[in-house]
Image: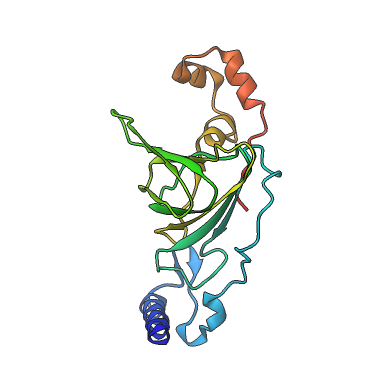
Length: 211
């Protein structure tokens, strides 16, 4: 049964490549590969997702390992990618959004407090505490987060996203770490704080927790 499914997936992928390759040289910004030259390696990556990642390199205490079309050519046009997320004790994957994908996440180890916020004007928070084996969905484009509330034990999650290149916009990084910086006058008025508070935030090192 699995053999038949694998053959179907490969055949479908090759048909997608064939239809697009004949009309374009790039798909979604990535070079189309001649379907006659496609190999099993185009659908494979020794990603070692079973191995823990280092969460100490991130100020927010998390490490996101994304497997998308930039790492495997095969998923181009198939609308799928995968990520492993490691959380230190009290670590978080800070508020962010994926402009091109809905995300479905499951907890492999530990506990996570997760949530997303709806669009204006309601800005309603949907949140839940997840345990091992639980699943939660983050709708496309909405700001969401994950936090490990345990001060002693790490947590691990796996997530699938409905795009071969979902994109990620971390809110704090985008607002306070943009290049060039957004005017502190604008941000002070937007957040209703003093400019010196904005200046302090902009002076911080807004590191990325993706690799």
